[in-house]
Length: 399
Ligand code: ADP
Ligand code: MG
Image 1 (cartoon, protein in one colour):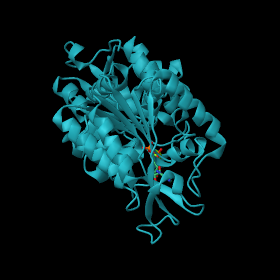
Image 2 (spheres, rainbow, N blue to C red):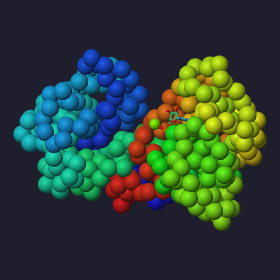
Image 3 (tube, rainbow, N blue to C red):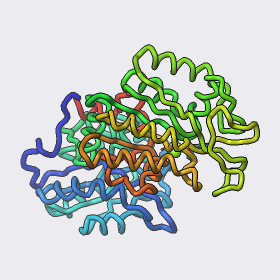
């Protein structure tokens, strides 16, 4: 991992203007934020800079206003939540550049915090326009990026600004980059990857990258059905991408070639209807799935074997649930494997990193998200990182 600067590398920031890219895309209901996880993640960075005497200006996008002002997507809707989490007053500034921002900076005292308007109200943001970025940079002395979740986009506030001002990773960004590096960049072997979720098609690039990186590839969820079908198993009415069986076979061949052991379930939980505890529920060998049945979870014998695999590993990276975990009892494999991983992590024998919207929900459901080494809430950015891509926002910090 080539080096990037962190807040430890800052000199005296008293009176300096710190432009801090954060993630304010929090779920809303009726005009108020319902989950403050994202701003909580960046609170240490914001408070550290403010306490060091900087004037902190928060910078973020919110929703998809497509380059136009739209009052329903003003970041000011998050202001109350941000003030609550920070325990400080935050001054809302309805621009990102120009005289209003200059005046506001004049009003802010050292250690005060301001919030600039939604960067995506201006087309220059998503176009990564140099002039737009330069206009924002003109008001700042340093740039701090604390939004890993936006780092897969080469936008003005995520990429260009880092090239125009002295740029630093915030504390949340620093933690995320270190955790991801420990999981896939420079991990202790053996490494296991769990890849689940609904479809192979949404994670092809992830699978193709992982077979060259990890020692064990554990495939679960709906995507396991496509691999089973590729191996000649009749998966009945299961979610299955039959047009991707050649691709699945190519991935299995590549894994074989790379010395990566692929684990597919050999027992499964099936039902004829997708409902909680349906009367047709049963567990069977993968070769015994009836034509009118659907595979909805990995079976208990396979889960036990997978737990034994994890016990031999030093590192785990996990994306995608093992079954249709939203509906009981199809959460069983995901919950059991998550608890095994959490226990091994607590014992100190496993470094465990997980990410993905549904994966985070599943780990919370299992009650073990806090026991993993790191859980990433960055959706798209986490997946692109799992594909082995260099994220533009991260690359710009490394220069
Ligand atoms: P993430 O958001 O963590 O990247 P995905 O969105 O890829 O995960 O996948 C999660 C979805 O996959 C869940 O809605 C889950 O119900 C579904 N899923 C998992 N296993 C199956 C299965 N066997 N059949 C149908 N859907 C499944
Ligand atoms: Mg999902």
